[in-house]
Amino acid sequence: MQTSLQTFTFGNQSINIFVPDIVAIQKEYHHQHVPYWAQVWHAAVGLCVFLQQHPEYVRHRTVLELGAGLGLPGIVVASIAKHVCISDKSEEAIAIAEQSVAHHQLSNVICKVFDWNDIKDIPIPEVVLLSDINYEPDAFAAVLKMINLFLANNCIIILSTPQRLMAKVFIEEVLVNCITQATIPVQLREKQEDISVFVLAKK
Image 1 (cartoon, rainbow, N blue to C red):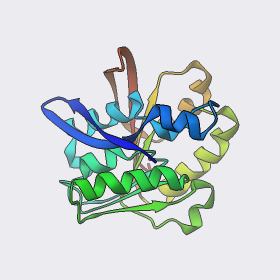
Image 2 (image 1 turned 180 degrees about the horizontal axis):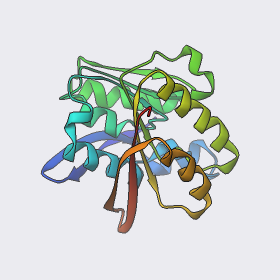
Image 3 (image 1 turned 180 degrees about the vertical axis):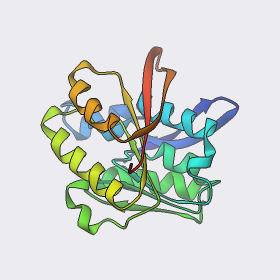
């Protein structure tokens, strides 16, 4: 798939990653809905901003980014994390994330195809990054089950999400284990969104 480098800036940090050519991907998907993984969303940038402000959550720790899409947050934290696994259920997304990892010569980052519905196959890290994974109400129960299983294994989970009304009940469930939260304004593709970030831990 045709890709190009795109630069993202947050605070005093800029990083470039490979993204697919939108025209090419529209042709591949026959002008149907472009898959969610094919672009970087506001929540991913918001998560990067939060992690830049609070590096203590990932410094010298093993980190797993689930549902990573193009993997921007995982690549951003690689410079301070012990080890990072960028994962998504899309093989195409992971292939592009691997290009970005190779571009930055990140020896402590691997990219894997994982589906959080098969969590038994996923190694347990110290920190789990989740960016904009609560966009389909039908999947909320499965996402909460995944989150609770990681919490039961003493993982810290950092979840970033747009402030969607339809996700209100989901967020109420998440807040039970929230130890820190923040709101990050993100400007991306000429649109600003407020992104909520929740740090979850077993209580």
